[in-house]
Image 1 (tube, rainbow, N blue to C red):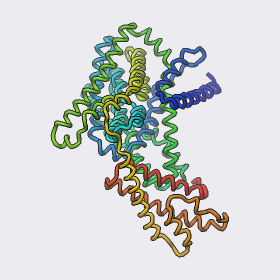
Image 2 (image 1 turned 60 degrees about the horizontal axis):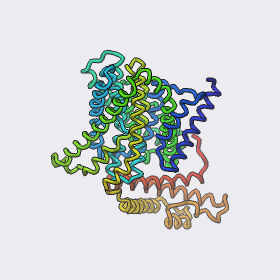
Image 3 (image 1 turned 180 degrees about the vertical axis):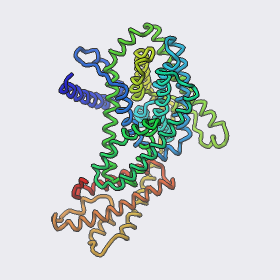
Image 4 (image 1 turned 30 degrees about the vertical axis):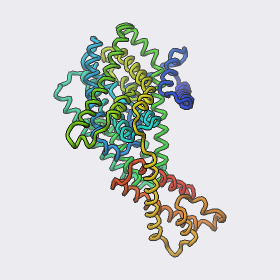
Length: 525
């Protein structure tokens, strides 16, 4: 295919992704399922080219931005508060799933080696962060359950991919079993170290970047740069990307301008949307090839049905067994655990949220060509993802049947009002300290009366005559907003408000500070 053809099909690819997602979103249907179906149908249409992507492209080009886009929306405070539960699921459950599903697959598909079976289990082990977030948002789960599910679905990607790398190494060469836990520990330690070091260094640089375009450009290359550095140092690039994303999200209010933060959020939401949905369309376009390979290499129709049923049962059973066993231990174990326990209803909700998605679809193509039954394993991964997505459609019904208490929206609104009032008081105090004799009294009165918006303050002014007053107001308002942000961050550090109130207050302050930039000359350096 020539260059023009590649560009044309790429444009068509994006248009189909956006159109299908927008249409199914209006009717409340699952966009990933719809994109897989559309891609699958298109794969059988003559003239539609097959899409082939090298495994290294998936590993180095697609996974880092996907993980980073999710990480920068993850609250470090919430992760810390639920770290034990999240680690039990993102590390313990993934390891348990790899063992149980790996052994099940090895028994059901005798032609597989143990390494290949465990590699496949690592591929299907992690849940999908996007699907979990969408479900949690629709049904109004308790805040604690949402935090646990989102934290798990982010961090379990890293655990599963580290396990996959170990299994792939066993497929292509002879591996010393003693080296596996050692290599795993090295990968984790180096990945965490690179993530923290890169986060600190990038945050230090961002403090000195005044132009939002420069700040945004720097952030855009972070996931790929950090991933490559960690891989070169024999660490986990996945863990490094997750850590740097969470760290940068926490530090952003202190080191980056409001306009930069708003731009970064919008850019990464767009990147995440395109990549996530494009992967579902991509796997659908591979359906005909995967199905053909599975039919040629597979054991036949009914044995395949039995294998699929056994793998799905092992996935569901292992998750329920681990989550409910953990729930029992927390509710009836030592006092320290009982103080952090959750209800059985919450346990069932967490266990039911087992949707697989983008990482599974991407990771299955990382299996090397020498993997036994590679085409058949790709087909099985495809079936697992589609079956879990379809099963996820029933999750809202299951969760409503559990009658779990929804988030206390009234309390969150009250906390937001209290926090914003506290921030505004800090802004007024800083205003009193910053006022000079040259500042016009009318400007000071307007700032005191309403610290929310700039527009009304310039009504009736002639542009050139008004600029000194506008400049004065912008300067003083920025000082007030800086104090407001410091007050919010102090409240966060002291743990006096819940994270939803903190995030909402920071976004409100960012939005107002961004509006001030419209009245200033643009900076390009």
